[in-house]
Length: 214
Ligand SMILES: CC(C)(COP(=O)(O)OP(=O)(O)OC[C@H]1O[C@@H](n2cnc3c(N)ncnc32)[C@H](O)[C@@H]1OP(=O)(O)O)[C@@H](O)C(=O)NCCC(=O)NCCS
Image (cartoon, rainbow, N blue to C red):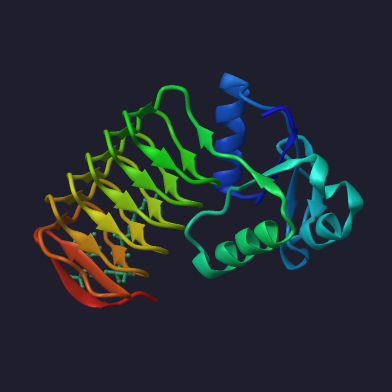
């Protein structure tokens, strides 16, 4: 990747990505960018912050690559920005901490962020815009679709399917051949032993449905 990168987001996740890149220097970060309605400060991590809408309208937008570093606060907003980048044919990158392991025949889409010591086993299929926090294990032959947030130290066993727009809390474990449907929240330290329903909130060991995602 020779293009300089613009990080979209200017909160904690954007800072974590910035610090990762400061340590491993995998690409040049040009600046940060936020939507007009979130614009508060003109700098973040000592870099300029620009407004997304202005950037998209600018003829120079193609000269950069983009990485969406927005956490789990608003999955739909993140999806919308990603679709806007695609619509404008703008390049996006994957941020993969060099200490993460990516197995044989594992495939990744784009705009994913994979933090340190994550272990992505063989034959894993990862779509777009997923965040996999440090020390996660993603079991062989598992599919993670799009726009999910997998908190630190999760252990996802083999042959799982995780849909889209899910939050999986810190330290969660799943047994093999589980399906987590779209829009689910799985609470911290859960042990998931059954498939989930779309949009459900689950937690506990074993995890049970406690309601709907807020
Ligand atoms: C599951 C979760 C989303 C629920 O949040 P919530 O709906 O606001 O729930 P509350 O905090 O009101 O708790 C409701 C009850 O569930 C219990 N509870 C909450 N989360 C729980 C969990 N993960 N496991 C077991 N019990 C849990 C609470 O102790 C409380 O019990 P009580 O009614 O006996 O007092 C949240 O607790 C959670 O686990 N978040 C994930 C945090 C995380 O992973 N952070 C890492 C980010 S990188």
